[in-house]
Length: 144
Length: 408
Image (cartoon, rainbow over all chains, first blue to last red; front, side, top):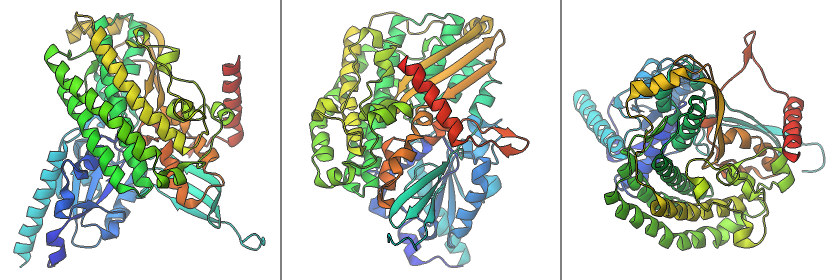
């Protein structure tokens, strides 16, 4: 698989809320709004997973959202990356002993980048995106 | 279209949809472009917070209540703390009340600006969306200065607050208050005197005073329909009893309340101004002294453990009243804990507002009550393996009963 040139230049991001507390979600929106303005580099939120290169998953994956997360992930075109934003998507965080969680996210779909924090700062999220780009470049190098 | 041969069709929206910021499933029965009937299925963000809380002690729970909702976490923590403090007969120091009030009002400012941005985005007015979010960062900076966190502040503790607001922080707070005062005229101009916004929001998503009362709406949604309700005014908590707080009504700005989306924008923007005034009053009146009833956590827990009884904590969250019921029975963990978030009260008004509207107006009407599903998705009743769906009649009966109680 060879990454397209368009993919190298800009990352389009689809945001998936799998039952989070909104904390990470508003920080994602804060990260794309004017103070940080990553749209300068072509990073923007899109409305369909079919247009997206990166899937941002927030929340600990509630029972209802497990199947939907899987389906959204399957709809994304290759090549694709998954970023898991927030502690609860990694370990359950403060919700670790809940009866309604099918997470963490890594159990449902493969995750490439973890951004820890509850909630992570916008700078941390942008740092995650930069790491995502680096990972894609490495993958591209390996695949020739 | 009206020849009777065309059958209605249904449009599902959600749980993952660009117009929705949070997972919820709407099903619209349509006739052409017109919404005939609405149904919605919340519960997608249900994490079993109450269940977890009943297995933790109050000091652990305040971290959980912060994460009921990332936007109005302070309100939930405050409501929970108030309930526990009443059961355990903990007296919060005066200064603690003032710090709580200041943080709660900053939360209101950031939440309303966040909402204003989302509303502009739903209307397709992205310039305004970016503007609102840029000015929101000012309040986030101050919140970070005061609490150490941007989201999930973790400042409120049972019995007071964890951090004091010091004198050297006052100039920064004052600067942010002046920033918002200068800005407000511009925001009102941009939101309320813009032809596009007026055309899209006037007479959209109507709910009159009587309907708002019957549907038990709370917060800005109720006030925009002309109901003079505000917990800060009706049963003051924290420092609000000392302050001059009056419910913000749309007629103060326009002389008349329509109960439409436009009025909800008016109420929220004017509440930003009100919050600025409240914070300023707090800074002037803040008494010296401690901010926490008991700084040693084991002692605090011992006090909570001795408590027996039940209490309700009510707080005016940015979206309306948040209510926490706590019963303690001499154990470390509460015996019962029930959360009623503001969107829980407001969500039934969607059915009224959306009927007869165009599909294109659905996003802004849904957003107009400032829904917060992570606050609301508390419990699913499952009996014999089937989810228990409350019938319309049952809900109506409950609603009528509550209205009768209110009318008495």
